[in-house]
Image (cartoon, rainbow, N blue to C red; front, side, top):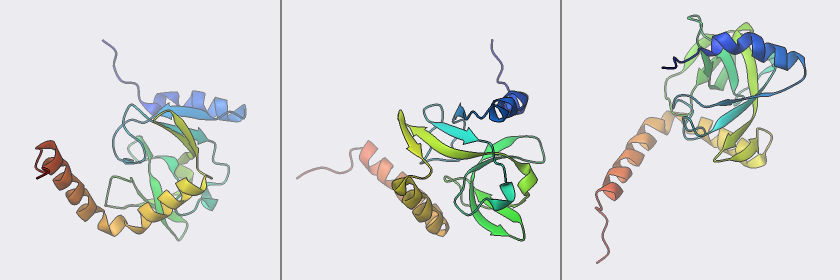
Amino acid sequence: MNEPVSLKDFMPLIRELFAEGKTVTLTASGNSMRPLLHHGRDSVILAPCEAPQKLKKRDVPLYERADGRFVLHRIVKVKNGQFSMCGDRQTELETGILPQSVAAVAVGFVRNGKKISCKSPLYRLYAFLWCAVRPLRPSLFKLKAALNKVFKKGGVKAS
């Protein structure tokens, strides 16, 4: 039986590929970046982050937490040289992320087999709007769950 391998185990190889000028595409694992990335279906295209201190709101870095786990979340605030991050499916901020924790930055995504650049106007609009509605996310998630329940049960019928 295969055991999962930690991204930390692959970071030396990923850094080697970055040194050769290559990007790295990784399959999304987990649901914290939904609705943008779906677990096991979508991918993120990563590039080296030459100047992590220059990252800005709405960028999506891959960073290492104090416990050694790597996480891909969106920057929602930059203050005093530190980042506040939040997954697109989350509501709580993770604060105090230092630039030296950043291992890479997303330059694109593969969603449903279609490549999307982080420079794309539609993607940039999504990132802007999704950050803007962050305080409303709990209500949006509840509304979506309620609608899913109604439609799954066949609760809406034509008369």
